[in-house]
Image 1 (tube, each protein chain N blue to C red):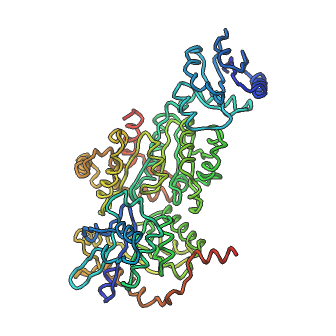
Image 2: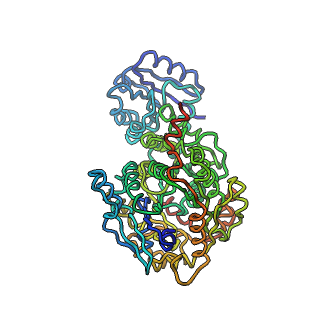
Length: 367
Length: 244
């Protein structure tokens, strides 16, 4: 069990004493120093391995870098009275290892430092949004199977967020009966911290959790894009990969999810209709992103024959590189979804499972 | 449907409210110069001088012709369509056409709710490929009922009914607690042929099972429906009465 030697910085005297008390009462935590002012802490002579820094105090937030330079062996957790996605993101980029809501209990403190060890604490999270112009793209099937494949390859935390607000299918695909859904999570986001947000996600296995959609479409309009964005920012500090399903077309939520993501997968199913036309139209919209080529990846499903040659042919037709093509395995997919199981579980050697696996490998290796 | 109604001698207009990715003009191989966006701009500027025909595109095949009010050409235009303006446009179409057939997206959006409000009949099209689809049909139907649309305004149509699936239409009917008003057969090659040629199935000289079934649906609608003009109240007034 690790021993934590802590410096606590908090400008409010009462809050300072309160948190100091909690630290002293927490097993394996030793309070080396408590200061109201950061500069006093910086000039102190002790060697902590954990610094709890209040960033509600004006001026402290920009000093995160300085604190790190002063105490290179210490991990910094920033303290705030309320979660704020932008702030959390900023301090983590500056080198902090996390953000804790104050005042905290012993349990919360212990869990917060436990999460420091886990990857996905801010710096390293990849958000992947799956976008389709129209429904019936095979998006949900891909996301569900890919989440499991990614978790298996990376052995890190993967989350799926069902932001297809009116008709999301993730819960059915994973055979889940969630107690809380994305609607509640977004509604409550102002009061949540990463630890409490995690409890809205339902675990599928050791490494995969799902934030399910709502069963009532009328609740969808309660989900405000800004709150949804904050939820995504908070999720960054919890998971290594976040896969987001959105409803089809360009709408405030699908656009927010696309903006927040490191990668956007634009998907369509080959059905003999006007899919290519839709993809071209969507590509036109996405091409305003300066980093479109790095960020936007094209995936076609139900491709027959599912070959590299066909993939290249499709790339030519839409004048954009196609990242992956998935085969038509309608019966397998239907059987899986009808039984709340994954296609890859039912038939791991199937062409579909192998394609998903290849895609997971590419994502994991940073491709 | 539009082709079938037109063939029977009615004046028909299709309105494509799949604003971002509408396919009506793709399907009919039309290249519209004006769209619903132009119609909106015009009606908002000057309702008195607004003539819907100026904004619709004509489709004809042999002796059959009907009009299409196309989805916007540009994405920015699609983002700027307002539901009240569209309602006004549709209202102004009413005197000129016997039938207005509206294509929508699969969502409860402000626009879709507004136009369902105005509609005499809402055709709820579903397929039964696997459980998630059926779940969504049920949710959609329950939601529509809870909004206040009367049962006899909604017609369930099952598409691709005999496609290879392990779920029987009867099972779905049980789940939905509703019978399908009409069932369309699966006929992928006929549909593909129709798309390739830009020719509605009902107008094809070579009859297909799908074409005939579509024809039957239209016949059911035109002979079965005896809705009195203005016989249904709008949802908003229904809700107002409820809240009094």
